[in-house]
Amino acid sequence: MNILVTGANGQLGTELRNASKDSKHHFIFTDVSSLPDVETVFLDITNIDAIRIVADSERVDMIVNCAAYTDVNKAEDDLAFASLLNATAAENLAKVCKERGGTLIHVSTDYVFKGTGHVPYREDDQAEPLGAYGSTKYAGEVAIQKSGCKHLIFRTAWLYSPYGKNFLKTMLKLTSERDAISVVFDQVGTPTYALDLANVIMKVIEEEQMDKQGVYHFTDEGVTSWYDFTVAIAELSGHDKCRINPCHTDEFPTKAARPHYSVLDKTKVKNTFGVEIPHWRVSLKECLKRLGELK
Image (tube, rainbow, N blue to C red; front, top):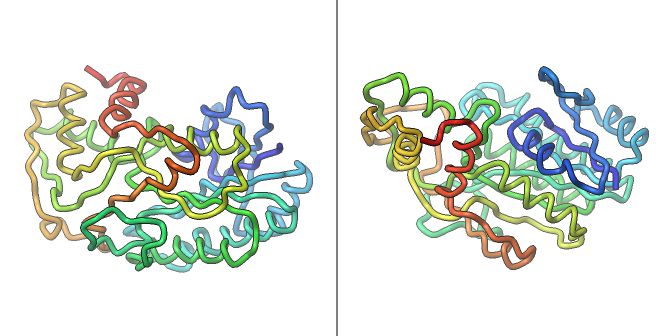
């Protein structure tokens, strides 16, 4: 198969590049940005004609959409562009997949839920998108489903990796530089190592399980708070001289609301694809090892 990957220079896109090195399939990695020593095809997915040109020239059979507008706070003031990238672009990719008889694998978010629950969210729970980011991502899901294309949607949360900007790398920096920091303890979810999600996507592709269409939840196993996640980061990296203080969300107000509870139920993805999901602490150690930060 010829597989086009969008957002290939982001966290998940980069991990897909790593995970696909030994694949029997041909991957075309695309993005609107460039990175040193990384070859990607320029593709503006907000332009459906541009997608068609690349899809036709590369005889694309599948698209994996890793591109998204992910700045949750900025999205509140930049709704038009967030909607263009998270909803319209997703619809464009779905239309091209439909035209070509191909499959779209799309990555979505826990922000499609309000985050006020107390039990892990299942795929069929009622969506109540949180803020501009959640609303535009959910609109993208709906557009894909309405397009009639073959699709698999993976909702994930708290993504981190050795690449780009993410919570893990920010906390590594802060705990190495400061004597004390404060981190919210009343937001609960599950950290997700981007390579773990990339491996699941590759499992679907390599085992050709694309017929198992629908919405799936994927994060690593376990439940924690941002505070406890930070404590683990500091302990495992040897930055435990930094005092980490728990605080309430309302002590650090942000433009966009955050879900207080965003644990996702992964029963469906485990049963459907036979995946074994590591605990978040195990994957955190692996990522820290790659970063050279594991003490």
